[in-house]
Length: 381
Image 1 (cartoon, rainbow, N blue to C red):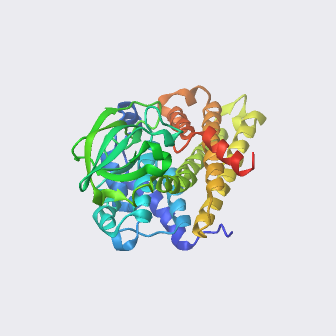
Image 2 (image 1 turned 90 degrees about the vertical axis):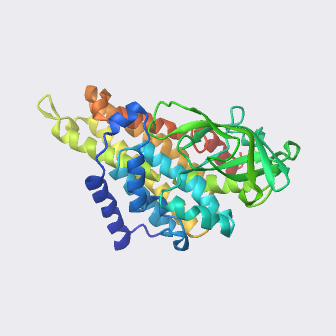
Image 3 (image 1 turned 90 degrees about the horizontal axis):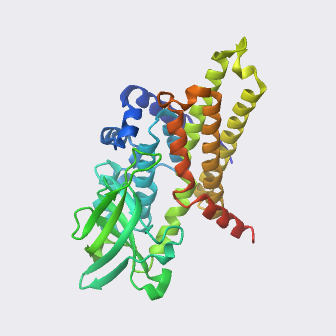
């Protein structure tokens, strides 16, 4: 594996940093407190090209290779502080765009991918239910075929982007007796009859990312909007999860680097007992551990990217990357708060928000416990 970046990839990173500095000036503290989705920044980043990274060129995208994509997303996390909006963009990319690219019909690709690439449509997916979270096979949402339509009934919980989304990939079971073999994916537009966004959910962190509960009340979906074919839902879900788990925390690597650099600067400048606090062994060790976590996590991420670039299966590596980075991000945020002392606890220093945002990473895209079970299974346990 060659981890050196091409000049084109380096230039793109510099462009992302420059764009964030010159074009983005929103008050993230205020947006976080108001739990507000930043529509303006969504469109700014779409115009820049973030939402089009993986979409083929013939559908209006950049068709970027996966290593270039994760390097761009890592750079985004370094340059931009709104972890919630970054999370919303990741859900849009990995949970909606990627399944359509991989399993969609030509008609579906032409209809949706150009608008998703431009950020004119906001995408998401809905699989979790009030009684079916980690155990997705036990979903209760049912789809019944009637003529050239399917009628869906049920509810979906913890749907990222639901309150603002235009297109949701919804999973439902055609026959509960078939268990996972009956699960099917449906592309549902927000104005479809019987498709209701019930509740916007308030969260501890990632507050600028919108999350909600969806109700399907005799929701009518055309047979043209099946993704793949009947019974292919779990294959679609598992495919998307491999990529999402492997890469949804690429931006967190950039965030961890940004926080590390901030802590180094503070430890050099902050004086206590007549010397910079970085000279104290306990402070220095915290910064060393932050650096070790960053580089270890980065190597896991890049290996995952290399495997997918080589078109190799990487379910184990995806689980390892997700499990390690989620904990590393949290631990580094805790160290950053400790290094800054009382200031680290203040809202205006923004580190407490970084911690709240990081904590969610142990739950979405499969909990840390689920990742551990996957890893244990691959180890023959």
